[in-house]
Length: 95
Image 1 (cartoon, rainbow, N blue to C red):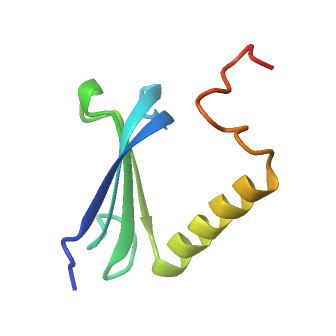
Image 2 (spheres, one colour):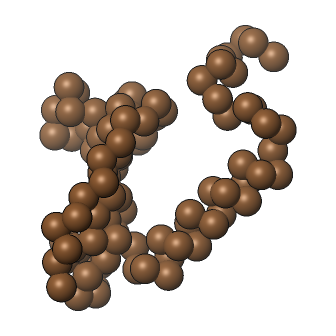
């Protein structure tokens, strides 16, 4: 069942696509039919930079279990690191 429920957020980071690394400014998460994964429905996550064109996109198609495990892993990694270490205030050369 397609939910058509889409979560869109602004993000600040980098992604690697066919042409190399690019700034990532947006993320979209939704449950729908995958394009490539062999499942009826997946949790789809797109990281993109709309201003840089269609090739500035990294797509994930995950099972529900994999998506939840990824979310848990992100929480665990951040919880075990010093607070603020991955914030935008930490820039190269600011060590």
